[in-house]
Length: 80
Image 1 (cartoon, rainbow, N blue to C red):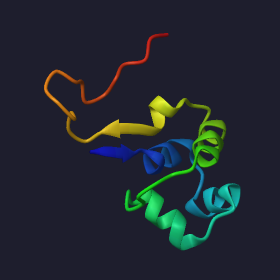
Image 2: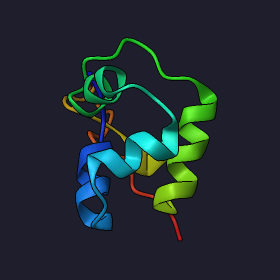
Image 3: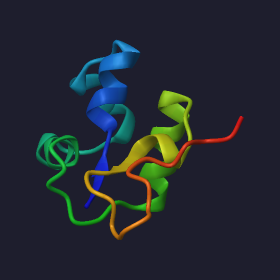
Image 4: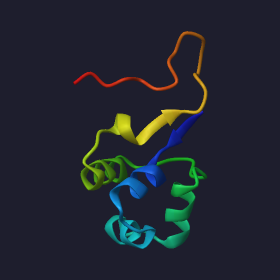
């Protein structure tokens, strides 16, 4: 299962949930769903904004709770 790591990135950045909601221009209910991994979809625009806010790539935003199939790593290491 794919998991969104926004709450972890938010904690690392030192910003509040309120700040993130304002940056994304979203309701508290939608923000809370996203932070708790209860959303069913996420728009490309939101992914792009999150990457800009946290100075990261989409690889940093998502991770697998469990590998989707045998031989697939739970977290893909980014080459630098």
